[in-house]
Length: 112
Length: 115
Figure 1 (cartoon, rainbow over the protein chains, first blue to last red):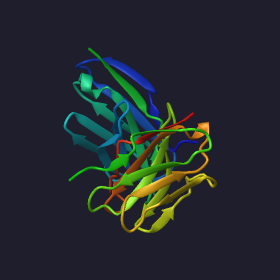
Figure 2: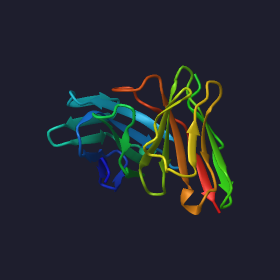
Figure 3: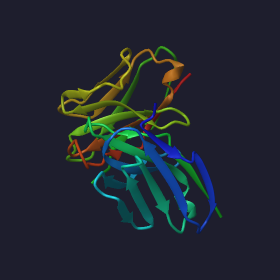
Figure 4: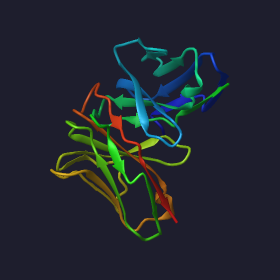
């Protein structure tokens, strides 16, 4: 089964609204990363949050991590059309530090 | 500093042919990872290589798939005798060092279609 699972699978919101995506995982992690993938393109690294951090900001992005609940959320504020993409969380699991495990992603669609 | 480069971007092969996918990591990166993405799915780890060494190939199918990262030149993912189920996007990523907190930089991917 997947280590990381994003929720919801798909999300459509109006431009200007905030978008929140969640990720749950099963085993202990070293860190958790969020990536964006535009249709037909490669992945772009957005933000990394370590297991001892609770919140991190980068521009319009805000990531939280709750290790007790084994969950993370990605908040995109003041969404733009260019934010339309798939968003993946990826976990760097404690037992192996040489690979990361991706969820299936949330497909975000920003409506004009 | 050029990013991770992959070629070709699109590859069409008939069943039974061989597919060779190339990945040039970012300058200064000596760690390469290959992932496969099936339609509507997340990425699945395949193999992790350092120069001239396979570190972890636990995600690689046991047959028909192989990977190398020679001392000189790009990393190669080779799929022999391709089947329709091999149709997917294959992404390569590189990092300067392995381990905690080092993000992986991804290439644009190679989309393999097996007809």
